[in-house]
Length: 276
Length: 263
Image (cartoon, rainbow over all chains, first blue to last red; front, top):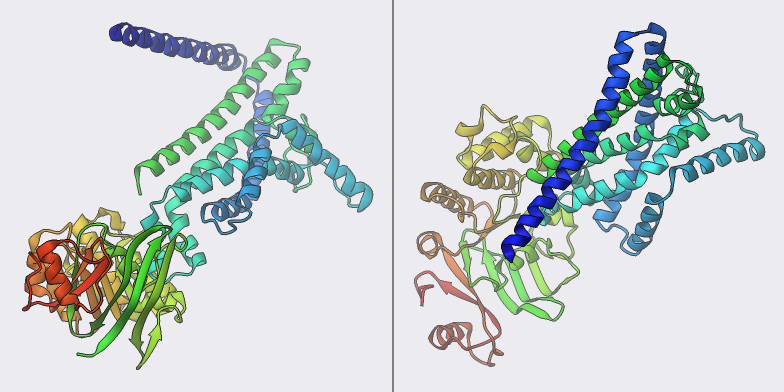
């Protein structure tokens, strides 16, 4: 009886793994064959330039959003892990969980609405652009950074957590000189995952600053292009095989960016689990 | 040899669970004191009570720990924590390294807590590493990660870090537990040298080490019944050793020559 269960679970395991490999292989194969190879055959400098500009736009807004979210997310993560505000810990949890489940279209809408309100009530000359979009993406990414920082610090053995304190460090010195260096791999992993999520987002950037035919932004208020926008609007505008190939290449570049960032992040997270 | 630390009716509990109750003893400078006792009797917690590194809450500590510092008696609770922990250094059983290089491990407390200038820092790093017998091994790799050191070397690095701060009290929790005999002896010889500079309390299960190196032995017993009034600790200990059914928790002091630790 036991052997039947063992055999069937093995068969199911193999079947699951095979199906997964088949699906992901088919997806990647389609992208490669339809996009990359076809595009190489009918290469156009103009299209390549458009894709490069869109990739740079994606990179700018994503990196800026991580820069905005990282300090706040790390501070909240440290506060949670160190129980610096024990009475508010539960409230913080509720807010972080709510934020984590917020759809990106809702964040984009709120960002767009906030820009309109500032223009109307404060008479600020504010437009959708790089900074508003990055700020909204930062809100979307805060929970990831908070949770990874919190878990990276909690996973430091208790003896090591109090090493600084037993040497006479103040709580702040302990955080800077002991906890953050020990948790840096875990936090770095969280930042990479946040980068991946921001790079693939379409809803937020579409409402808060990305324009499909924009050039590279010259300041923080300029509109900017992104790969996700190229794909989103390219689907309706594609008229030739070259246009279609461009969509596949955009998808490949975006996939490469998010995969590299995720792999880097996961590698850091795995390293954190292995080393003290 | 003057008394430099007084522990008065110190009790520790975690909620309902009592670790030890009303223990009193004193420590003297110039005397190497060893503390022994069964696992779970609260030896490590006792050391942590000295420099207030017990997690409170849940730990509930009552009674007093007083130190003779700067020619006057001060309660451990009246001292600011950074100052207390600089003066009362605690080295735990497993080496607790700071992240970073070998140099950073010794240097960081000197820089951050001691606010000591660079030239004096370098001097203290070299002296403390020499005293712990690490200098020859690590002098060419001071900037390499401390994690490359062996278990024994890490423990000696922690000791070097502690003595570089020139503490008035040095508390060590089984410092030789993971060391080979030669390294253990090196540490114990160093502690004997240091006993005139600071007051030292060593938790150790190694009775042979205590026989050779201890000037005074303390024995923390975990006993089940209330201590009968009017019986001296020595008699209580004798009774304990004979019957093993005496008071709740008792800290017994024995001179090395009077009673062997083994029953």
